[in-house]
Image (cartoon, rainbow, N blue to C red; front, side, top):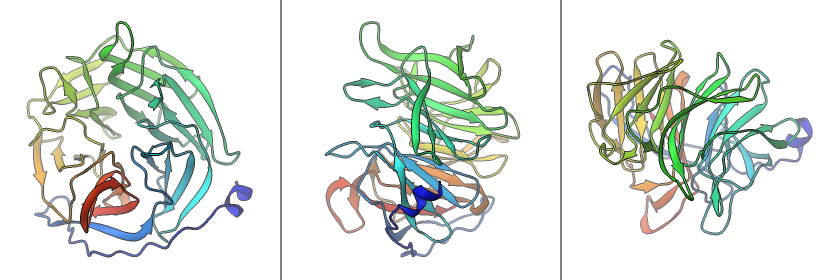
Length: 326
């Protein structure tokens, strides 16, 4: 890995432009989007972001109007420095997780690679700067969402979309073991066929929460709970507003999940099953964003996307790196 870092390029030092007014998750909170001086090395949408639990966020995949992004970037949340550390597959709209057993490997699940969806699971080694397919899901991973149980090194995929004959929206749940690279279908399916939900794993409960998404009847309001090995229930309270294609969801405590889309941020309490739409100052209307959560800072990070900048103007692929203190 040292050889990769020596060859990497340091692009910028991040300094906050806007002061955040965040207090704490259990208090009445004024939220503000903070845009840093650090920029992505290139404007990109549909990146996949994964936090390593310490001081780094890794970014890979994604696309722009011109091409796929093949670079792997590491963003340091302490220094605000972003580095180019490697090369990855031409692919976008997948989900990345850190496989903590090895310490320097990222699993990337499916996504889209023109002209079709990609059903593979890729393992990327940061130390060797090498990627390879390690498994294939029974059906497409395009527009599916992944919950990662890091303790057991198991991933679950929910719903999605399949092209071609017999294609369309899926209701299946798949299980992948990073220990054996084995894939199998879970006996239970979703209550209805659905794609592009936001999914977050609750470590204390050992369960996944599924928020919003697109289906024939729901239109982005449902909250589902998946408890392994095969129990899916619909919770009684809907989201505060519709989220048909949310970008990400995550827990910053055992009970509070945040759900993020290009147009809104919501908070969901899994104990009371109450959802709340949050007001965030300086929040633009954008899409194709990548986001991830840093629980120790109670912070949401947002990378790239497509939309207008803070100065307005025409919509464009974005290179901004921003965050919200929750």
